[in-house]
Amino acid sequence: MLKLLWREPESEATRNLVASEDVVVVSALVELEVEVQLKAAWLAGRYREAQWRRFRAKLAEFRRLEPFRFRTLPGSLFETGLRQHTSAGRTHCRTLDRLHLAAMAELSLDRLMTHDTLQAQAARVLGFEVLTPGR
Image 1 (cartoon, rainbow, N blue to C red):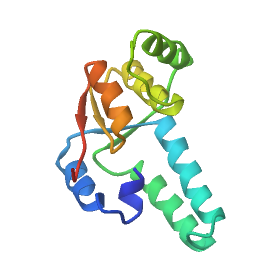
Image 2: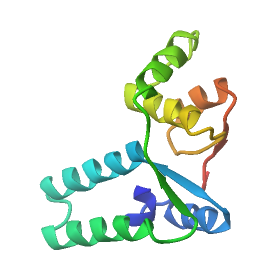
Image 3: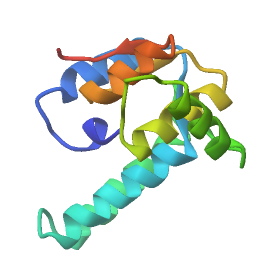
Image 4: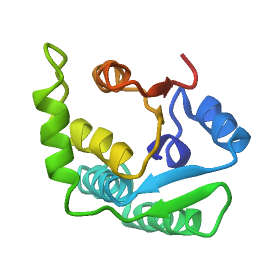
């Protein structure tokens, strides 16, 4: 989602991939992570408060745009994440990435868009298809 807001090397490829999809599910966890990253960048001086507010407004606008579907998550997310972790063998990913993968299971999704190599590897171990636009 951040690549849709910020200009990064993979932003154009990400926009193109999103535009080609019928549905792009955005979990509450993704929305939280984007909000946290936007605020952290503003507080670190990467941009001014007015730009931070524009980024937040654009994120909120995504709720009304196709192909986005924002979804809440159940409390069982943590048990699913723990179950995935304990059955992952030697494949490791960070806690937040594991929770994203658990969210996919909870929402019955099978395709992940990510630029994170470790998360992609863990997703593949779980049988998810991984999309990495621009790579």
